[in-house]
Image (cartoon, rainbow, N blue to C red; front, top):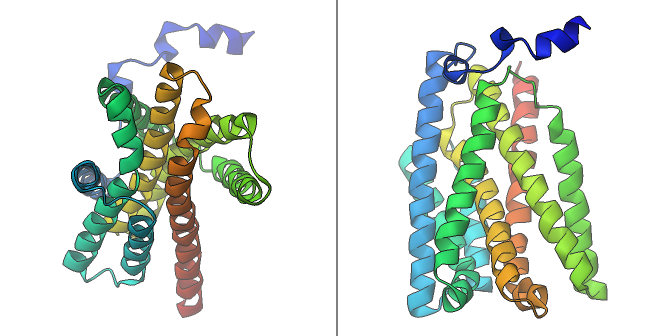
Length: 274
């Protein structure tokens, strides 16, 4: 009964001061987060340039996806002290990623150009809400979701692998689309809190952290755009975009797994040194 009354107690409700409460985050980590989000903004601009180049020159496709993966792996294998090189590689990976999703954007432009702006605003709002919720929440409160979203990512990977071999269906592709949106929204929350915790432990690699959030942002944007376009095109819309979306997924999955594996390797190396 006391818990029920406390839920409706106005003193326990959130207010504007609660949203501004970052006392659990040290000033060093706050400056690190500013660098991460600032670098993320430049990565989004580079991706927009890549998509624009595809619309003009039709350069997006499998090669740009491979180039995006190669740039991301090169970035992850570059030492942190080579900051300028790593930032350049991040911008290159973002540019190639934008070119890779260029066919989908070009298709959306031919159907309704306003969809791109709507999808971008929806993605930005979703990212701001979930990443902000992870920042104002208690530390490590949502890190337990990492196991759930990783399992969901594995399910998506195996479903994508099975559909590429045995053939897919509209229902399966819809499930991959909506379930993938849920998974990557969860990754925004988990990765934000993981970045905060790693920064508290001394990991201030803002370039790698910006790459992690950029990967989540692109995955959410692609799925929101496909969902919005599918609401306009009613006749078998998902088969129309399946090849384009699969190209994006092929580039997203290896980057995420490489990020997780590289993080685990770094932790093992640190433990061996200690």
